Image (tube, rainbow, N blue to C red; front, side):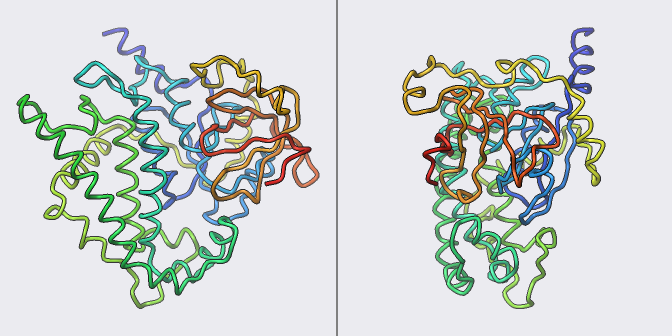
Length: 381
């Protein structure tokens, strides 16, 4: 009993401030918030503009990166939810905090499988299908122009509007795959005469449940035109929504629908440990006052040893490097001094941005999956 109380006490007082920067209506911000809630980590949420630029990133961290969310744990700044979820598991481990990888019926955590499903299904083809459900008026707004800059070319709002029916069928294809998966899981649980399943036959939802649920939740919200005001958009009056309920409903996909509702009930029943602040001055000051932890403690350790080839291609500690996403946002790379690199992530100390050093001395962490790192002298992004 006493050990349990001590764990709960520790859970309410992390040794370093945990800060999530994002905005309402952001797909991947929702994913990070769900992970923080399932892990029961107290944190501060700092809203940032839904459209670029985001001065807080550029000024505080010398970070031109255009996407959200961004997570700070003390003076370590983590980019991309593929890394953020893993670092939450690494720095807030069980048993002091709930795990995102509960053990399945067969004794496995399926962590590698979850990461593959997330990176190469939920965060890519499923996400693209979800984006295709945005009402046409969103693409005609400043949001559409901003996302065109992110992608690297102007977006044709009228062409995207004409593709909505096709996109709806593409989303239906993804739901069909998920239904097959959950139907198989339910059959297994019926044979065992146990409760309704989670995706990987775990006693509690895992990171893979987050990966599917947040995409379906966001797709439904965006198709209905919700949270558009955060992006400075207003419906035009015609075709303000996309008929997502025609494909995502309890009749067409009963197993997905049942699981979707179960997850929402489960997550909503957990204590909400988020503190939302509109003025980030005190939060940034708290980050600045932190002691920098040992770099090995701050990052994931890869299974494989260091690859000597990194040095031969100029990726040697102390080198000036450029880090950029390999999909969208490549026009806004981040530069800095390489502190460490592995098969899991790259860590850099940011350099000058807009002619000035960052307000806070930080380390920037990027995952290797989804990012390209090159020596700055030869970089051609």
